[in-house]
Length: 295
Ligand SMILES: O=C(O)C(=O)C[C@]1(C(=O)O)C=C[C@@H](O)C=C1
Image (tube, rainbow, N blue to C red; front, top):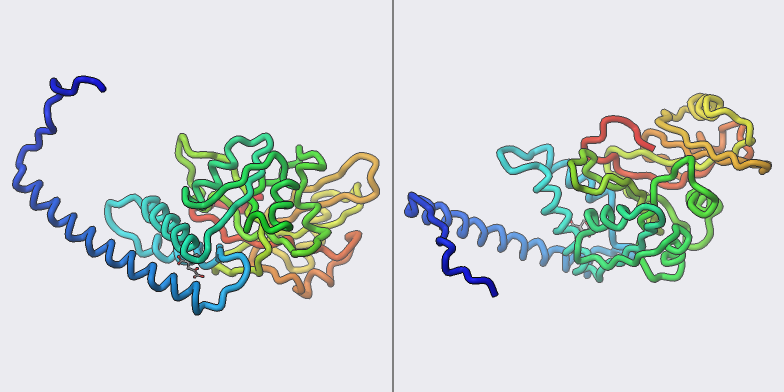
């Protein structure tokens, strides 16, 4: 051990004032702690009497709670501190509800596990995989509750384009249920990568949501035409990611549209001009502080 004898003790002037302020902080901490323990008792009742089944996370509810708290937040405490505290509370609550395991596909993006950790907290078990299909296999065989997968890009090879596989379904029916990070304003040093969370979970509205539509297209169909077809069917289109593999008879497109669109939304079956009826791949709560539609 190093010799600390030469270090001077912290020298606080006005020590009486400081001691009294610290006593106020301790008293408040007791009240906060009492409230947290009381909250945990309610979570125990949610687990026992709430009638929840399957994957315990409720991404829409979490987003709505965070938006509500951030909207009423006043004073000097950084709003992001509020988000961090509540994310930790959700993670503790989910421990009470039986624990959570998340599969992460980190192939090519070392930042993805960090984004998953930022969202789901240190209490949550993370299973790291190289590819999206390995992470998705964790969902189908019950090894994880949800998978954190990279945002699709037009440079993805077949292996990386996990959303095309999601279009063709299977059991359990998987859906995109959240977009990370929820705190959209990124500061230096935090992971910059984005991700979707996929789980076997029914849509969980947050009050401000967007949906993702998977479309089979003729390989030569332009992005403008895809957008036009969706718009004339009544969708408010944010972005479109086309995928046209060489020498294939069918291409794909991933469209991001406004609102929480149900799988049986009549606008989907009314759309003309695509190779098959477009399918809803899921929806997500619009991240806090997002300035415009993101893919
Ligand atoms: O409301 C629920 O369903 C809960 O499980 C409670 C709670 C919370 O801590 O408030 C925890 C996890 C969910 O993702 C959402 C909310």
